[in-house]
Length: 149
Ligand code: ATP
Ligand code: MN
Image 1 (cartoon, rainbow, N blue to C red):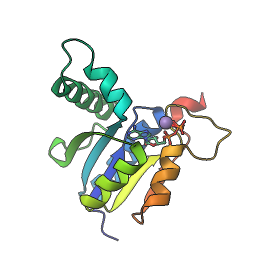
Image 2: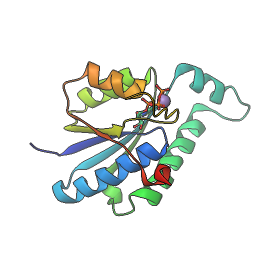
Image 3: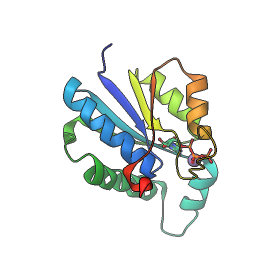
Image 4: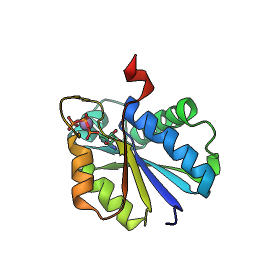
């Protein structure tokens, strides 16, 4: 299996932090390109851009900055020139799959859970949606250190 392109969908939860850690170690082995993607729902996008003085470009810049910080904190060994930052609007699972297929991703790395993080549920709805809708391999990571304490 070639792992040239890795997609890490992030919701900035400890689970996506862990997905980035795993992506960094695979990147080092395969020299892959890593794309970090955040999907805003139309409602979230509308709420953010309707704040005064917060045009869409600012919203994107702020989220890209959050991604940069998430990488600095969790995957500082990732070479900057191998990382892409993407922000799109839509239904998260659908957009993750559309993006992954259009951009020929070899592997998607994401958390079992995300910001809701209900341990009683096997998998969060975004991860279930992605696994259902695509044939691209999905690596699902669980048990971030930060939640074990
Ligand atoms: P739910 O959202 O169903 O209440 P949850 O928040 O615990 O449950 P998910 O949202 O499915 O679980 O999150 C699982 C993984 O999906 C996250 O670790 C992250 O990798 C990815 N993810 C979730 N939401 C987004 C999003 N808006 N954009 C990009 N990736 C996301
Ligand atoms: Mn969620």
